Image 1 (cartoon, rainbow, N blue to C red):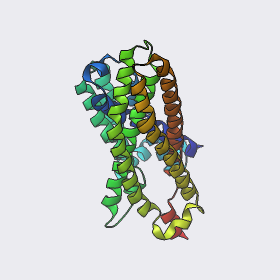
Image 2 (cartoon, rainbow, N blue to C red):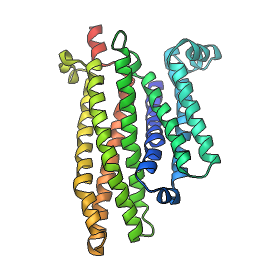
Image 3 (cartoon, rainbow, N blue to C red):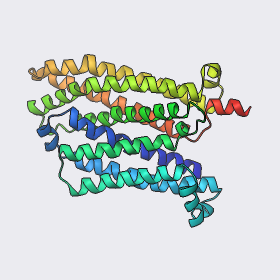
Image 4 (cartoon, rainbow, N blue to C red):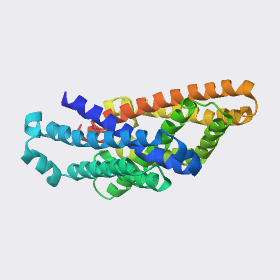
Length: 311
């Protein structure tokens, strides 16, 4: 039961973390300042994300301690929690993550939406994203490759957040076209166009950092483990979902976004263009949620390299 709780709390934190980093960055580079400030949903979305990360991280710290201690009762003892906080590398990482999310939450509650506020929240998101590497497999590597693996894990976390946080914002923009005016449609088109280059860069970082991570977690001489171990099977599933997301992202950039731009001056084609975009973004979001779920489970399993070493 505790293991399931740890996985669910990981998923909640991942979901909050991608919004906490990727969405404010998207508001900075993907939209004009006046357009972004005028959006009514930004504060509530980011407040929710910060709260989820803060509460989820604190709860995950207690749950992870209970798992390591063998029971919830033993894990919640002050002495056990104190040892986890001061005697392991996991404890400080959970603490930093919680504090960063709380600082972002306080800033979002007290300040009005602005580029400065989003920049502050994005910095907090960078800290949150990096902390996942310290509580994951990236920090477990020993020897000369330790910091190479850790750096790759941090970059992988950041790149995923940049992509998925922007995806969340684009989904809300698309479905939030209440006025359905030409201006709102042009804002959406500019946002899609603004994300194109950043999205491509995020994919490149994801691929390169993923290759480095796979070198340590699997290795070229253990490829067979991808189909013979639980971790390997989940990693294979993750790669399949990632490939499907790439197909949809490419369609959005090279087909749906240009068609939306062409349809802005033709009301007859605007509705169908928006509908196709909505379907694509929904499918991409569902795939992203599935991918985050797989990653949440993978974080609780021994990688292929560790299992083969044990054998």
